[in-house]
Image (tube, rainbow, N blue to C red):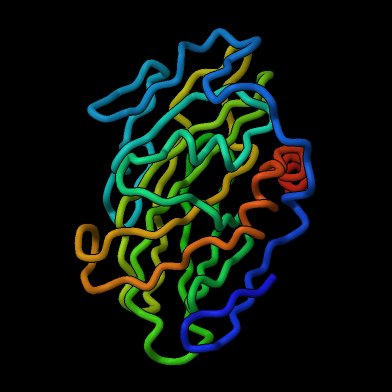
Length: 241
């Protein structure tokens, strides 16, 4: 999949087959069918009703700006994600997604994602510039989504880092995460995780400068909107263990 920026340079966005083509879920965003969880809520001022805290996940030494969950939904779609975060902490849709071991190029800057396993650990965001000078700074809203499938429906939690500005290729390594909810029949463990990105507001978050964050293309939204591929993520995670 390719996108072209204002300078006429063609950028390649790598969307791996792990997202698959799943049927769009018909259940509502707030559905919690078959679980004993309380209704999902946001965390700020927190904690929320599922005991999540913004401090469950850190990025560049800071706790998340907000979090949401736990949401029981086997086929969480991008349209549901965007409905959840619509007009909260800025506007615009999330459209790029990367999973563990994957990367995405947004307006000339490549972001790679790595995360550990278990019920807590560290995660890294690797930043590189395979293009030409001038791609920085970029300002992005970043959602880290954690999934635990030890109960049915699967449990998802979102952690937002609002208006994160990248001014060079310095990697953001050693960030922390912890699954902050309690399973019905077992101790939760990470089954899959991914990052979602959208435009941020320059000058309001970490770093400074005017951002050039990418606007997701309709084709990207269509692919991701068909489902976030929980089954494929689960198979991949278990194969690695």
